[in-house]
Length: 354
Image: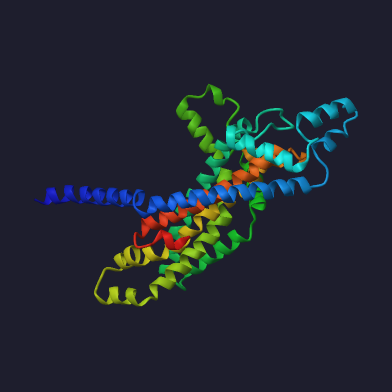
């Protein structure tokens, strides 16, 4: 009989988990996702118009940049003006671009690379998303346990030490941290790679060695991208858990004789983590901006250098696509945070969150 109980408990837990996932996928959750999708389409439309206006209002254009090259003739400039559609009014340029995006999924052609913007982004997005997601996982995996430890040992030396660490972490911007880590890597070379995503002999390595090589090159960029976010998240976790531990129902649970671990990790933590999940959507989109800075310093082959160059030379369609991608990540991050809240606490009514 004891063996059957040990077997049935995981089965019951799995069944409850599947039932909760099914409840999320059906009912009011599917309606909520549909409404958010329609709202997202309208938001992206307005965001694209605003982005186009901002880019168009910037002084000069890509042709002004290349016109400084004495080897480019006026005839070539006129040809480029017609080829890129810059001879048309701004409203017509925007409507033509929007029509291509909706009907063909075509974000236009890059002025600099003379290639499809979609193909350029497709080459760089995996590297940027890999580093951003890895940093997000590392930030939460470190910050939440340390925040819990700080709250449990409130006003003790452990709590004070962690507060000092969090203050120091928040005081270092990503680019300062990246510079310091580059200095450390140069002094520890070849223990840590200085830059890039792979080694020079990457193509000669086996698949497992290639994964290890990418992970080895990811150490410093991930640390640089995680330090600031880790420090803030740790303080939020500490503050939220302290507030929950002061609630009356926690005192009641302790008065009933429940084990302290159960009080903290089952009753208190479940309610303390909810406000932090709402920050997930904003963190996911803000990591993209932080990744740009980190990629620049560590020569990471992501979107950072590509988009920075596009903005500098006013590569219109590449800049538009990058701005739209940031808006999409913000929308997806917020939707993911709402669904995670529903999964953690089924009592939450998604319709009331709109």
